[in-house]
Image 1 (cartoon, one colour):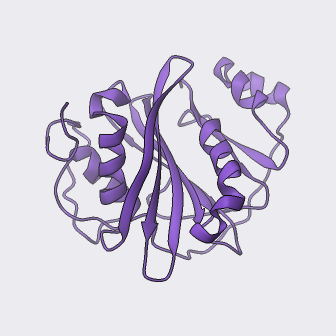
Image 2 (image 1 turned 60 degrees about the horizontal axis):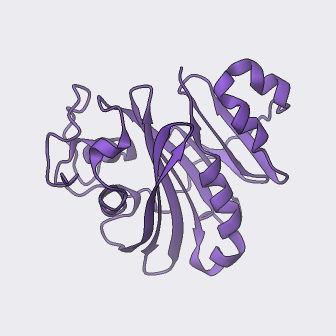
Length: 233
């Protein structure tokens, strides 16, 4: 099976023309992986502390969600106590996140929510254009996980370990889900990611927590991962 890291043509797109350096933005880092270049990139897991903006919660009733798109029935049904929904009609995705997390702005990320007190507890969504139609065209779940974790989701200075990776079919669409840890000198982050393709885009959602809080948070973070859906726009 073709390797993500070793095949420069695997993720070919006219969009992916920007050369990436080790000081590129996170969006460039994701573009780098999809281009399958070989430079190092800045990792998502660095503890940036950008300015925060207040979340404005809009109506979350199921009837309103139903009006948006027929594919969102499952999204509405999965709303759970203690979570808030996110629905992006423009880019075609939805998920839920724990109540109390604040929306923040991080360059290169489409959406980010994080806990104010525990900044390693967060969820982010990144998306870039791709000409591929199915995540399986990029290789196995293990191959995709290994490349993304080492080149994008953690800084190259951190020690990483893939705990598990799997493929999941949701409403006829393939998603890859994987679990990993990234160890820095002063903390270890335990994280979950899910990736898929739709609407001509490569979607990545990642959530996680400090390793010391993993046992407390893992079920809630798994709920976030399982809630992520892509729908046609």
